[in-house]
Length: 152
Image 1 (cartoon, one colour):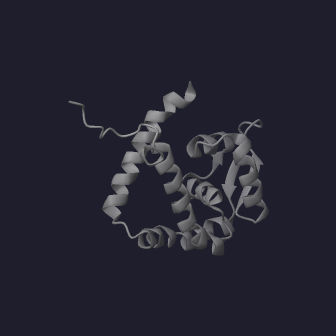
Image 2: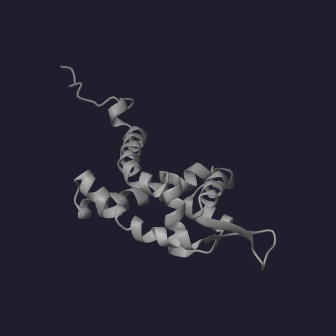
Image 3: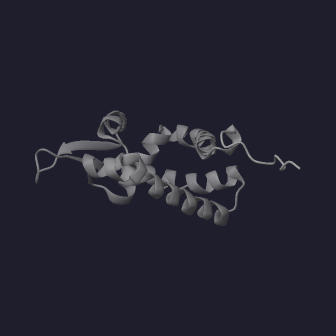
């Protein structure tokens, strides 16, 4: 008698974590897009602004670490945000080798408009805040688990 063949194909696209994460990321960023456009921000620029609203001033190195972006990817984002008047990049007085990133008054004022974005995203996704918190916790666990693997 033969065994049942109900085994899942380990290479099935719909079974891949990387596929689910990729599609989910694109979908969520698409939800943010129309909310960010009136602020003149792209999603990566929004992430920079979130970090600065929370912790400015920051060195480029600290910002790179917080956002988990290499400086080569971060630099064009900062240049664009500086060009539209949301931040300034200046040599750190304590360490001339380091660039300090600070918010302008316009960048600081933008925060009050941006506070409307998280609840709008929750509403548009139609997922409970509790479920989103659980998802965030699970994704944070995946990020931490992948970190040492990605470094090798």
